Length: 346
Image (cartoon, rainbow, N blue to C red; front, side, top):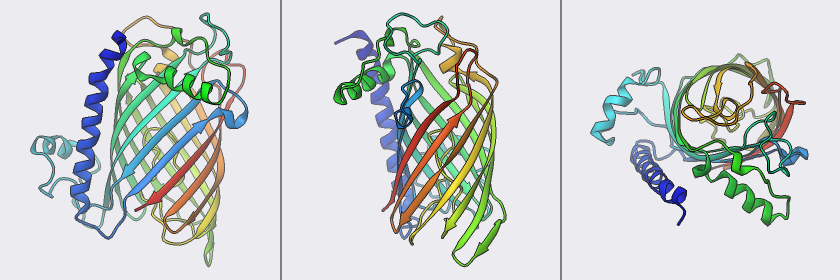
């Protein structure tokens, strides 16, 4: 067995145990409100939807979100060693009984490639090959008008992310050209990211019966060796039976709306913008503790998104088209990708 695979086995074993522990914790806590369902989001993002294969080229993620919880720590069902740390988390431990709370855990993988994946040499003026495979835990707290999210992501960048193997397997299955430069990807590095974000439901723009238009804004920040940034943005929605949640999700830290249960049919069109002021992006800046390929990143990046969501009882399907502004010097043009999210409740 290759050494890199041997070294990665303990990491993925620990990650699996961690996720199983989270599942058992949320299952126990969910007993406090059994009438409310679990939520599952399955994400698939890819630039093949727009006919390219470059930059942020693919992302997959699955998130499982608990029913509403009465409280995070006073249930007596969390491990004693964890209480000290959960009590210290900012924003989410307000004792107000009117607040709603959920716990979420996720697994995901993102991959990044230069524009010309047919080349096997190092393309010094284009972004590095990189993969990011991670697990995440998030605490969501909401009032009627706002939602706070604290999220922690832990994972692996580099060959032990197995992004190269994932892409090659999918390309072989679909008879697509293989990417030939993965030997130049970022080196192995454990990744950690801590994220905070607040979302606000703004007053409705207008409402007429079941038809209406609303807006959601957000403000947040990320800190870690994978990414460090501040972000803000807004989303507007126009449709029938607008859900009582916090907008459309994408694969990004704290991107989940969390409170999105629907018991009736409906749908809407939406447009959104998210702007980041970036201090660090390992997928452009290169490895933190080792020499690696890197490019000069741009300090401000914006995502412009639009799409549609439809839902019926316990299912929801969301399509989003995203235009991302240039992320590094020398990037010839903006990047575009599509996002498909299947959500269901049980």
